[in-house]
Image 1 (cartoon, helix red, strand yellow):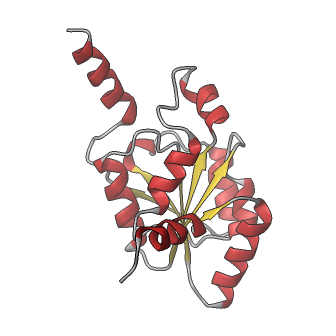
Image 2 (image 1 turned 90 degrees about the vertical axis):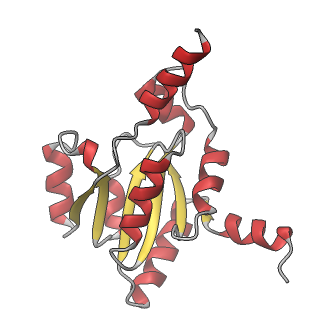
Length: 171
């Protein structure tokens, strides 16, 4: 029987702490002929839309790597009130999901530099981001033969959920 300490260790193993670890894991996955699926986002307030996105991404086959925005980059993107949970909590929650293979925290504005390191087969985004992927990201993904896929997110949004909770607290 597995005790909780073993489970926590297994989850922590899935959280990569530096670019060298990320590169080594991706190289090993490619040597094993595993396709790599890449998902990125803030994952600030984990909700059913996120869970569906990650689950559907994993169903594409291969190893699922999730890049999450660092706390500082979320503040720049979403404002000083965010993130709700810090990056260590967000990465642990994501790594605890059975269908997430690895998690890496990044601080860059764009993930496109990671295409060269990760070499994913698929880059998966929620359908609510169809109009948010700019032409330079598309060009960069094509340069590395990354196929961009959009998955329906069931109309959940962290920002909308936070607004609703805040509104209900002030009633």
